[in-house]
Length: 474
Image (cartoon, rainbow, N blue to C red; front, top):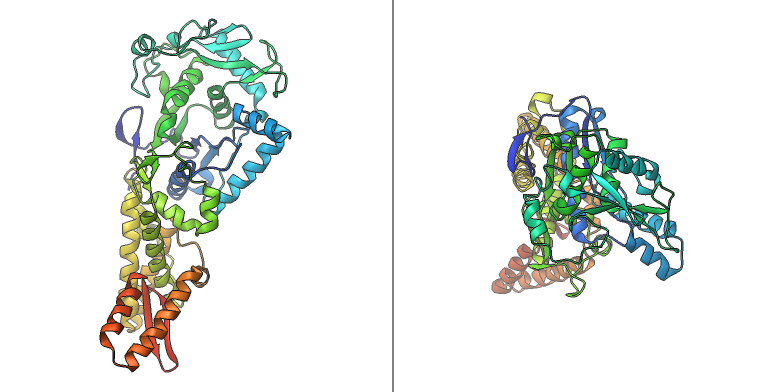
């Protein structure tokens, strides 16, 4: 089944056709490493991890190259280092390590390339010079600024009109800017900040130019897919396009944007209890804390539960439902532990038909995963003949195949349940003791109440000669 993805630039769902099927390229804006990532920061790496898995399945693992950058020079990094009295590199190394550890708990595979800004300063300087030479940037008072009026298609990605933006500008404009929306490519550093030599004086790059230079250096132009959060469409990605094409003299071409990235994908906003995350509100949820309090797969499932382009509201109900669903799926796999899944021929792989090919429809794919688990559970309940065994082998293979694409059900089922919440274990054991006492006393209303509570907890009770045991539903 061919892959279709929604292209932000063209505002429509398009058939994905890579420039070169033997080298499919993807770039996603990565972390600025000055603190722990919040839960909203986790949505892009999880979403695009699924896309990368799908691309590798489709084109072959060796034919997909995925880059996700690390911004390791930034005002917030400088401020953090100054407050702690430590070198910049100590701050960035600490939080990059934490970010990667937290991503691993979400089953996010590392990118093929993780370019760091500080490793690409010479390339950034060269690209800025190329933009100046093309007549699209100018130096002023130690700064280099991009002249937005020089790029014909500025605003195409975000759908903004440059004349309207200039007319509606309400910010104080630096005296050295020609236009209010001209943006910094290079700026002077303060005495206590990191700096690098350049033709325009000691300084450091602006935020937008970093990605443009690293994309060209690591992947080459044009890349196939550029991804990131919807908050990056303007100004970051809009400015990336302008820089990237102007550096190569395409400022006046109608299709200049195609010389930079062929498809643009953006995930929607994440709110917390229907409110935007804000330090002033006090509802910023750090991923680092969440993965200490619950399995990373629960967080991943919750992040994939809404279509990537739609808003996602993060709340306790979402997490509870995600945990219950995963418990049920792991319960099926636990019961099917003795089943050896068959190797599926390529023409039978679920990956050829499932909803991920329809603009990465993860909610439908998660629903399909649950449907496959129910099919396997029904077959296991039959405890039948060799035909049932063969059916179970195929059903388990399809379940595992789709789970691998989604990056879930990656733990051993026994280990998953051994890590069950201690409070849950205690409550279930208390309920089982109460259940035994109610049945002995023939107190059927009490026994019914306990049964209902066990159902709410997603627990199955199994009575045997040695007493009752339990497992999570599957």
